[in-house]
Image 1: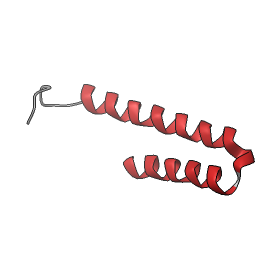
Image 2 (image 1 turned 90 degrees about the vertical axis):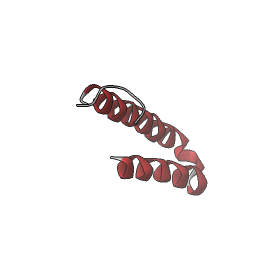
Image 3 (image 1 turned 30 degrees about the horizontal axis):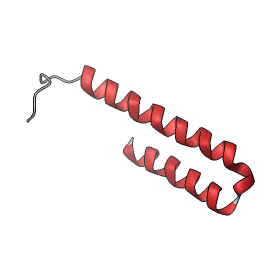
Length: 55
């Protein structure tokens, strides 16, 4: 999942750099990336077998 997030961020940066007129699409990719990471965190923290301690 982190690779998918990295690819989304990379594509957003590439769009802004190479095609500035597609800025809205790049922003949508960044929002999707942030939502994906929030989902990964939520699933990882709620679905954890171990309690929430610093290991």
